[in-house]
Amino acid sequence: MAFDAIETPFGESGRIVGGSATYLAWSASNFVKPVNQISVIGEDFPESELSALAGRGVHLEGVQRKMGQKSFFWAGRYHMDMNTRDTLDTQLNVLADFNPVVPDSYQGSEFLMLGNLMPSLQLSVIRQLKQRPRLIVMDTMNFWMDIAMDDLLVTLREVDVLMVNDSEARQLSGEFSLVKAAKAIRKMGPRFLVIKKGEHGALLFHEDQVFFAPALPLEDVFDPTGAGDTFAGGFIGHLAATRDISFDNMKSAIIKGSALASFCVEKFGTSRMKEISAADIDQRIQQFVDLVNFEITLAG
Amino acid sequence: MAFDAIETPFGESGRIVGGSATYLAWSASNFVKPVNQISVIGEDFPESELSALAGRGVHLEGVQRKMGQKSFFWAGRYHMDMNTRDTLDTQLNVLADFNPVVPDSYQGSEFLMLGNLMPSLQLSVIRQLKQRPRLIVMDTMNFWMDIAMDDLLVTLREVDVLMVNDSEARQLSGEFSLVKAAKAIRKMGPRFLVIKKGEHGALLFHEDQVFFAPALPLEDVFDPTGAGDTFAGGFIGHLAATRDISFDNMKSAIIKGSALASFCVEKFGTSRMKEISAADIDQRIQQFVDLVNFEITLAG
Figure 1 (spheres, rainbow over the protein chains, first blue to last red):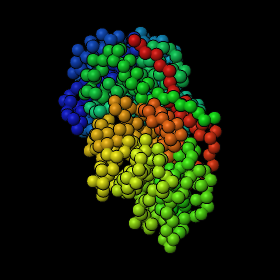
Figure 2: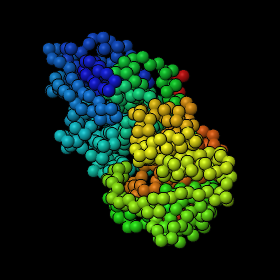
Figure 3: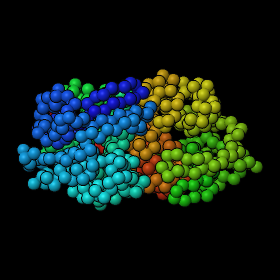
Figure 4: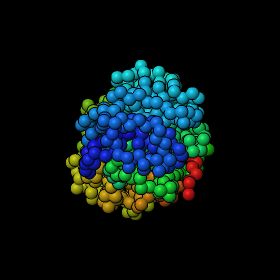
């Protein structure tokens, strides 16, 4: 939970609320309550944002507020293709010595989503849970592959689902073919692998099965920040709500995550996530069905 | 119909038979006979290749053989990502003064596929047909946008379906968003637009409808040469066989084209296209169904 300042070809956001856990909570809380949040914020993080999350059934006991300190801050500029960006500023602030603590009230959580963070901290959360969750989903990024690969490999052995983008899947596996990359990564621990390809959709790999979900073709992507976290929040939110971790239900989870991500990119930050209703989400999911649905007659 | 010499990270083909019209004919003839071929070849083009095509129901009366001249030749090297390539050599040879002539026996053809070529020559074929085909599909490339945009725009007004890749759609329309690009291009003439995204699949746009078909995730892409032509051949071959040019049937045509393209890239040139059976194609199509098929329950 943090602050971002985002520049895109369409405008500048100024300093706004962001952070993986913020997007995850806004997204997952469309489907499941409570969401037991673990994060760290500074004195500067607005109380109104916390109240808004609490109002959606997000428990905040695991969110540490460090008085006299500042929240994590990231500033970045997106290029025209909206797939690449330059980091203009990173201020770790409260994240520099973050030590996540799982409150007693969170014990027994059945679904654990590890937002993108130092792998050793992700592992610490897993280790603090007395009963292993039914499903552990982990997000990570190339940065940790560069500077903390050993910790990342240890953490990977503990998770069920890994989510990375295509270039991260290639970096982690050393394979260019995503099919080969998926095989290699599943040997590192996760039984399921989600490869996010941004505007090109997402792939789900499990044993010898593969599922592909497109991204909705949009007139404009206004701000891609948080789209991956929103996708992940919708994914685990749907699984937690249905309590069904089959491959078939993960397909639905990916479509729901994609639908939520398609809203997220329509405005800066979490603005669009704060507006949408269940009916909006249903309508968007129907667009996904229409987008990929076809009837075909085989010759044989 | 031409010769290629292809280098990929996996090997070198040497001089092999290629060319848009070759791939189109191999592909379309899986679904429909006859295919009335129009092209130009030199004295060096192997008779055995012509016999093989004739054996599949490809009529060759419209293929001009220029004795004492050489067939078109292209040499290229693919980069590791297999999406980008360098041209090492281009020898126009018989293409330099090609003037396509539609034989009388081809008059009345209901489905016309214009492979990638100078737009003025594509237009010439349209103009030679006394009765307008039910469906005209056109492939083109960025090269013609650079050097023959005026001719391209004139030809575009005469066609029903345009096929281009994503960067060509952006160049032609001046729009970065593919949704906006599709709107702009449909105003130039084609009622249908297929945007090919290589390993990221293909989009079909028509009025306010959009359909997305993924590419099959493959362990290895051995040689992408001809994949777009093979896709186009399967697309128009299916439409011609079913004589149904509805949006819904174009979805099936795209899946069938994608299935054929997924075979094409498995070996150099047309080798793989020469091996596959109807059962192989059915099996591949079933993989596409499995890849994108999902059941979802809406909340509302």
